[in-house]
Amino acid sequence: MESATIEQAWERYATSGRTPRRDVNAAGQATWFNWTSHQDYGPDETILGPLTDRSVLELGSGTGCNLAHLTTRGAHCTGMDVSPTQNAKARERWGHMPGLAFITGEALEFLTATDETFDVVYSVFGAHWFTNPDMLLPLVRKRLSAGGVYAFSNTAAEDVPPLGPKAAVTRFDFTRATWEFTLRSHGLHNVHVEVLPPPADGGQRTGLAVGRT
Ligand SMILES: C[S@@+](CC[C@H](N)C(=O)[O-])C[C@H]1O[C@@H](n2cnc3c(N)ncnc32)[C@H](O)[C@@H]1O
Image 1: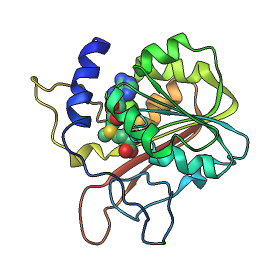
Image 2: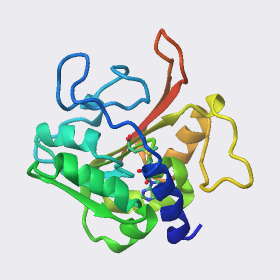
Image 3: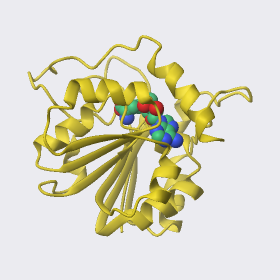
């Protein structure tokens, strides 16, 4: 799919009146990390390992709320997103934070063009979910430093209906076993893929994967 088509689809999403993340979470924190689509639920950023002075890249960073939190943990953060509107929202809310930059671009194109390396690359319901992993993972692997971490989350494959042939985007809904195989076959080690149950009040399960170089 061409990047202009991807941008158009995600601009529609970004301008569809989405509710911004709350100002504070249930614990009263102004920034926090959420791997799931449920409020105040699931693991936090600690699964990424140490963050102080680490360079971090988020693929499909949206309004930048997770990345802003990693900045408070001492990471040097870059968010990239294909939607100019998402990046504008991210800059408006978090642009004042030091060590945090937002770049507009398509993930495959960005990873192909950059010569930077990152200690942590991750994606939360982001570009990872919507990009062919056989194209994305070799590029991610190349840009990860030795001992680097790659992680992503999305809705568990079994909990979402397949996209129809007329869908504006492509989505890669793999089972846990397929993700384990795919990450390992692209040179990631210590791969751990889990499916988080929904919170007690219901909803969808979340697939969460971590691998290391
Ligand atoms: C469902 S939103 C999630 C945003 C954010 N990660 C969050 O958790 O709130 C998906 C995001 O990925 C971005 N995205 C999708 N495909 C992309 C691609 N190929 N390159 C860059 N960004 C992409 C979209 O513009 C959108 O902001």
